[in-house]
Amino acid sequence: MDIKLTAKQEEVLRVIRNFYLEKGFAPSLNELKDILGISTKRGVVIHLIALEKKGYIFRTGQPRGIHLVGNDDEIAYDYLVGVPILGYANAGMPLVSAQEENIGVLKIDKSILKRKKNLFSLIIKGDSMNQATIGGEFLHDGKYIIVQKDSEVQDGDIVVAIIDNCATVKRFKKSKGMVILYPDSDNPIFQPIYLDSNSDSLINGKVIQVLENPAT
Image 1 (cartoon, rainbow, N blue to C red):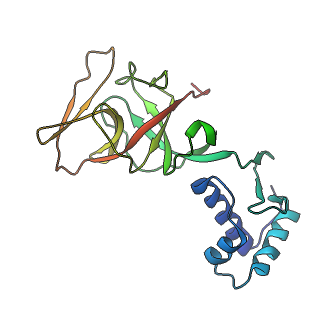
Image 2: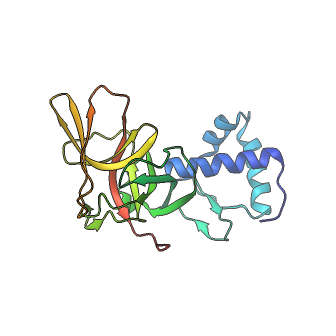
Image 3: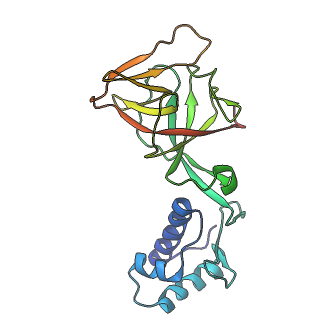
């Protein structure tokens, strides 16, 4: 859209978008008032009216009835959750930096994710996990994985681990003071990674979903 927003309107729109990404639904007027530091709900409504007139949102009059209009003029419906794509997961040697890249957002139906929270997505890079499946989907190069932060991890789970500031996706096992990250591949060059359970390496989350990437 090419209709210019004021600085405050940009802030309000950013807060609404971030709330959608985190929660999967629109903020209430009270929540917007508190987040934005506006003294009254009427003050919030004035900004919402301006955003609606400029075509960035539309409102239904229902509780949490704020709907975003995307840059492609598609509606961000309430049943969709935005999951940020933060970069790549190495399904090979951990070579690609784990720095968050924010390279896009996946729009996913809540029912697919079973209303799980604290999610992010990565793109698989490599073939060290090409024999592993989640929900019948193979972890092939180029596919999206959905990762749940702070999830309880058990032996056999597929995880994203940070090693020397690089993200790698492997199968997890804990044994005698060690964490072992196993490949699951038809390529024999890949071997397990053995880590001290007290090392600086970080299990960043559990892989809960694999999705097709039409770009690959």
